[in-house]
Length: 338
Ligand SMILES: [Fe+2]
Image (tube, rainbow, N blue to C red; front, side, top):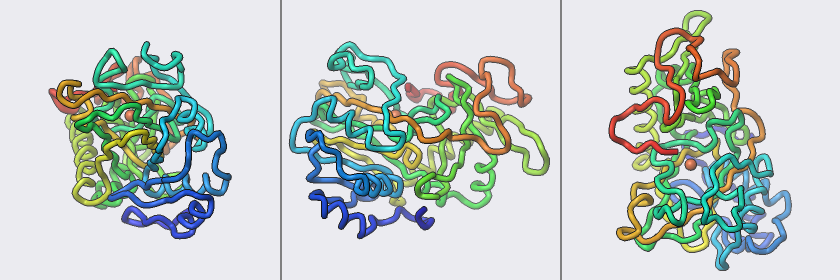
């Protein structure tokens, strides 16, 4: 386990050297993430285990890795590399768009043209797979066709975001757990990252049906009411957005053949508004997503169950308890599609 730090840590020189020894180059991206060059994802050969371990640790520390590729990647190249991380196998729960190559069930195909892929996905801060007990350990994003005028993804470091919260809010958020609006899965709002050891915040801003507070002064729980939940969602949105000026969040614009792998427990993400603009405005954008099975459940504290029936009556008394669809709408008029 690494040392806790209030900033996004620099790449470890030993890991840079190890990657270089095996013929590739690892360099930091600003303000978060890192880039790998010279590792040919079309070759069937995976890097040796110690290199993969080093890269996975840096993904946990800095949030994501971009693999730069000179050659065009096939679906299998992308999926093979996705399985280098976390639970080491694909866990695919999404719909399959008709334009998906060979109807591959492991590809979630996104586009700003509905003929080419599913449009409008993920406009608010979230982590992938919040309807699963273990969520996903990692997600992969392969840009099949970057739009000429851009349309990237925002990433925010959830450990640095926790550190940026005032102390009393840290203590309050550590008592909270979110309930997924689709599955009733419960996840802690603050968890300790399994690889970095850092406390990280974690909430889905387009799929949360309730938030449970462990009472501070005695046994028992309560639900946040509409005003409190609205405030929490705004505060969560604000602290991740603050990373854009405070150096723990950034926009990544895809370049031809890029593959981005994210540690889904370390960074939140959202599509940039430009990613969802029309093909006339931006050019055609096509992105393939893969999702990797979690290593362990993202389990709530305080003896809460992993899952509740969000479509039944609340076992926690009065408050917001909203199953189905996007769950609780925390601001009117914003897109909240998953
Ligand atoms: Fe996503």
